[in-house]
Length: 371
Image 1 (tube, rainbow, N blue to C red):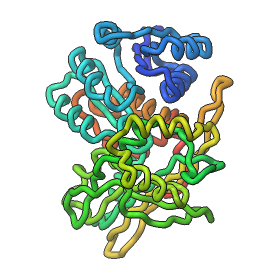
Image 2: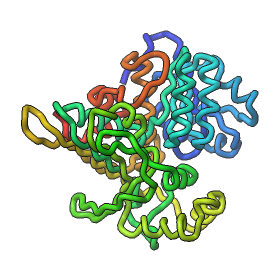
Image 3: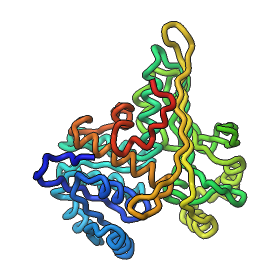
Image 4: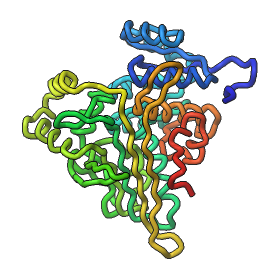
């Protein structure tokens, strides 16, 4: 793939905040594809050393707010792969310095704060650029938009171990803090044409996809800004997380009956001490829109099953592969002016065709559900 800048031009500096699993995947994808000058920053020196040894990429050890601001100032863009509670503070810095901002947060309150911040921003502030929220909003908006009158849009996504173990039938493939947050916070939906919220873990439903049994239930944040976009234009809109059968009941016991939703640090310690991480995971996506077109009731669907990959000799799990691809696509589409150049940008502002044609987003192009 060619670089974004003319030959001989200085490359735009992109700062990746966070040298963990997702930050590493973002760095590898951008390094391999080319087109940007990259810097990875983190407060964890050991993580930076590992990433530098792997890639040779320049790094910055950032231990306080002053050091963070010095890294952000003067950059073209910041890709924030830090925990969700760092989203609004980093976005504030980027807005102050006119730097484009992208993150992966599933936290609704953080996104609302960034939307408010973006009203007077000179740069793009684009949160929720991962898988869900993120790509699922792009494909969901496209499916519903194919209908003359949209009645329902149902979005289902799971990041699952390929070889599940234990009662939870789950492995830690994502931020534990983010996982707990989406299991505890209220979930936005559209019901009877109006925005509302439902409790996390509600709405349990069985799913059978390609002969494999799953369950799905409401979790927070997966819809991104779709409820604002589609309120009054669609009767039913919801997002549910896909898990193997039995997972939701086990989490209900921990969160509700044992009241660990009130002791999140303890729950995080318990989960990380008892549940192994894995690189052998799979992303399962099922999106379906139903409504009227040319006077007939029709359904438009998208389905995908995505596994991990290897890049520059490094194994990327499926959640690393898909999450990094999504945020890198958003960066590319802003860089090539396929998106607005300032203010708040929601995921559904990306055209699905542009997303799938991108050098990173093409991993989602299954050939299914395309018009």
